[in-house]
Image (tube, rainbow, N blue to C red; front, side):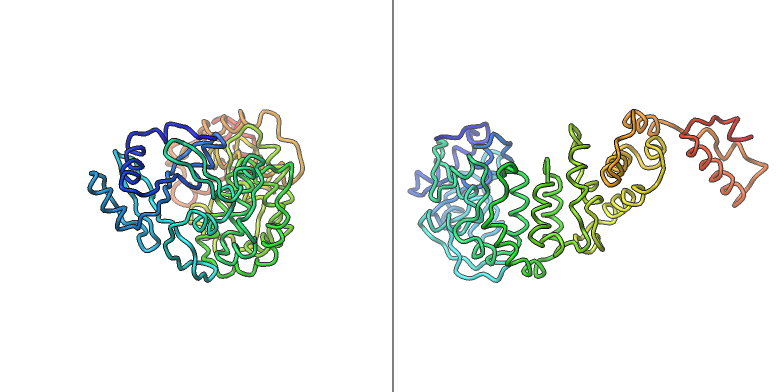
Length: 380
């Protein structure tokens, strides 16, 4: 089996591989670029594994006229920019010690050792420069079946880096087959090792949850997280109950991880996931408006199209209610509306705090009318 694509045939990519192999070393595409190419998904990052040491990769690449950046040289990784294309080139490695967050590695010359330290079998696939697949661990069959499976013993892989628990659910949401269900061994290993999540930085947890919730349909993965106790571990008080209904209502719309997080809920989201101030404001607005009676048009005027859409969808999912008729056009109407009365219409009769109070009263009446009252009625 071979892979193909614009990314693999780029002149700079082929030139880098040819340069390494001409010097007597291996140059193998690995990980996400191979996985995504096999699944006909976009390839955004090119990772190359080699048996050449980092300093040798650097010397070979610079001699060929490529620019080299020592982005992770202590872990055996250098970034080689060949004809404008960045490639992460990493020496074959094997772990010699781990603490659940970071691994101490030593370099290897055996592809089997390099494959054995990876997280999932579908990420342990390699390809030569011509696209020919090398499958040292049987990951190709798993990928074709969309079966996400840990390399070797699941618990051992997790104890090397507890973030792999969250990656397990994220990759299942994106690459797994929800109709066959999640891998039971992997799920059990996550449940057995979930205390290790407490040692991870909140930034890493938050980054994984953003990616998971941005998947096309994260509901089965989030439900499995709840089943294993992982969801309660990272987001106490969160519930997956309304997420599947939200996915149904979202059909055809772009994924919105903030709306999804709002319906899952949880205590102290800002701290638990290290949300930014802007993210927190958006999510809290969605959650606050779920129980309100503010119309779609009024939501569009107050918060803009994205938040208004999130509120309408989340409200229907949480309350198990149908979407309002014409809700999208109503949001658009609200976004394009303007309050008919301005401060100038009330001056000079009103000034200062009296002016502000009167404007707020008029705005409240206008919103309560679903943005239909005109200037004359509002000033009456």
